[in-house]
Amino acid sequence: MILDGTLLRIDRVGMGSGRDRPYFSGNHKTHGVNVQVIADPAGRLIWASPALPGARHDMGAAREHGILDALTAAGIRVIADNGYRGSGFAVPQRRRATDLVKAVLVLIHTG
Image (cartoon, rainbow, N blue to C red; front, side):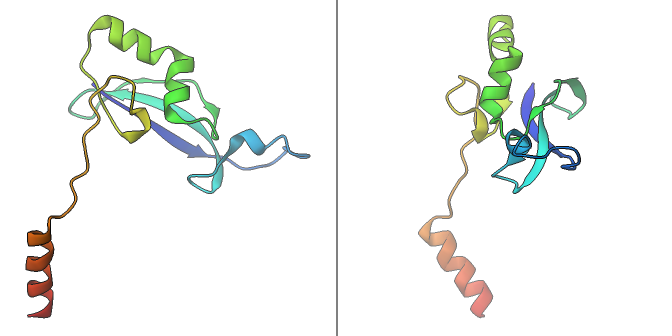
């Protein structure tokens, strides 16, 4: 299964005097709600969580919804992004270009 969180943008209408602060995502620099999504390996939606304020981090939102415990207890193999590091799920590493790859790219672009 694939676990990911997404920010759904919202308007700030009717949120005066600082009550909109929990909905502001500093990462996306906009107001929104955090929704956790579980999909199968083909990308088909299996489950979407109820919305939480957008300032909530993915790991915290997954904990609050009980997703981490439920998937672990069921023994389901999960792939997630860096927002879930430390959850015990598979989090693929980004590969950095080696010096050889960088040198080849320089040669290609400088001709």
